[in-house]
Image 1 (cartoon, helix red, strand yellow):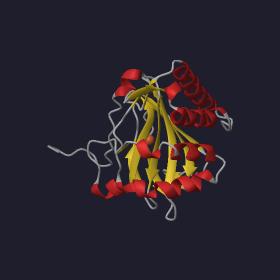
Image 2: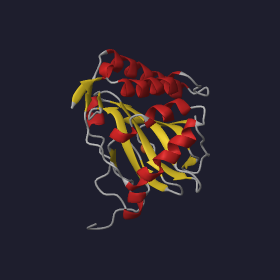
Image 3: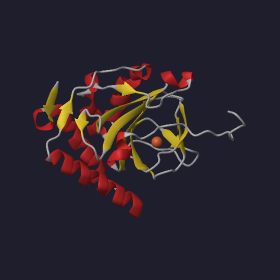
Length: 222
Ligand SMILES: [Fe+2]
């Protein structure tokens, strides 16, 4: 079923909360983060302005979605609780995916992501992707990079690290510029829910070509 954003109060509510994440809060003095935040909210405002279609995607679960209720409850108690509460209202219609052609078996129970806005919907837009990624407690999400895509994560629930650099808590924003390798590890106690935004050229956003980075040198014939 196809409708429009103006007719869909819950999707609109969720995008308003996304806008808040990228409008309020601090860039911590980083010019690159400030301009990324601005790009996300300016692109999002223009998309909302043109009243995009909402394309009915078939709801799809993955094993990790068992952890979503706790992630949303934890998120609702934090400074970015608005987005956790808004997400709860569309949770029943999300299409959870892995995003990679092949996923290590152990990882199939550990994570999944759901897009909110992008070339493939549910809110149709060619020039921005917004979504959520959910990790089970105690997950290592392998090293990867995104070519010609600038990615930010905003932490909504749980504690996690990118590479071995720091521990992030709800409200933290982490910028991964194009081509930067990153690996995610999550705390043992709680699931981890991150909101994310991808900016890039429409051709790239339509076909992001996800693959995990090989940490081994290529061998002859393999
Ligand atoms: Fe990433």
